[in-house]
Figure 1: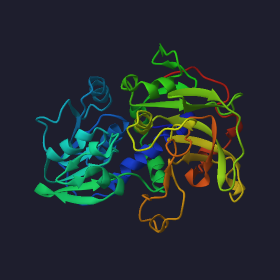
Figure 2: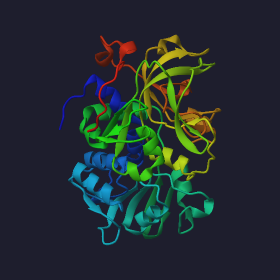
Figure 3: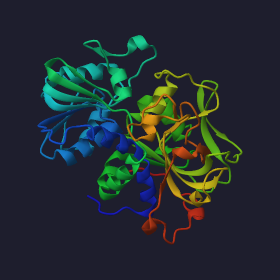
Figure 4: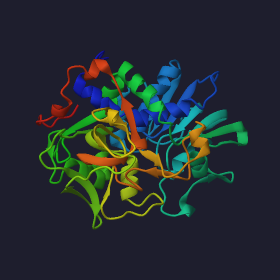
Length: 394
């Protein structure tokens, strides 16, 4: 296990802050006295891997098993997490006390319930692939998508408790970042690819015709070879570029930056990472409609370049996580800290432009500032990552 993180990797781990915060959020909803003998995770993607790593810290003596139909992901997760048992189907697996759904496949939601032990807990964590509402899974007349989205709790037959977990409160990002810094093996295990720049083309010594980010978004089969691919953007590029949806395709294009308006900030995006949600949006497997000019991406890290009216100038120069959600209106439950689900919630990369770009304007509520004197001391933020290193992966 590595016991240090370089300044460059310190920025890298921030991109895992959002997904790990979502994972940690799910376990906060469990009883503190929960006894767990067997844990089953459906899905061997980056979220499944993070669940396995975090569950092991909470329940170190539990058996962890993962159900993953894709052979490449089976091999990848087995090499990365040798302490787990990997299964192609749920047939014949051990019944578990705790089951986590970390895949968007509709059938996984019901399989997770069917294979759980009596009085087990099933965390309905992942969004579900669907083009029409008729494709959404139900179990004993329970709408599993609604339970996930609304973070509800339902009890079905055999006294199995279904717990929906869909997001996180912004403050949970801080706990997630702290956990990542204390456990650098999360980064080295889950971050299986690093590409230099949005226009980078080299992945695992294989040259792609189009930029790697376009290839990974457009070709889901290609993406199965990696858990998580990180993009290290140029800090101060000569030409600003962004990844947009246009004419039915994902394209890399240049643009001229604008200035932030009221309650907005302009951010130099330093790091970004692809989430399965980005691919689901592109494939039409969410209930929204794509529009030309949309910039994908909701996992990002950056530094604030300028602020608009109503935003403190003290934010300028701050290292920040780019949160994927913001609220278009007031919500009493959110304001009281009772949750992060709201009818007024807007999503980066879905409703508004995301962070697959060298710079962007975001609502200030999408910025989670991080101040770390040990990291920032003596660093030239203007020159950070200015000048390109070789494309590489781990």
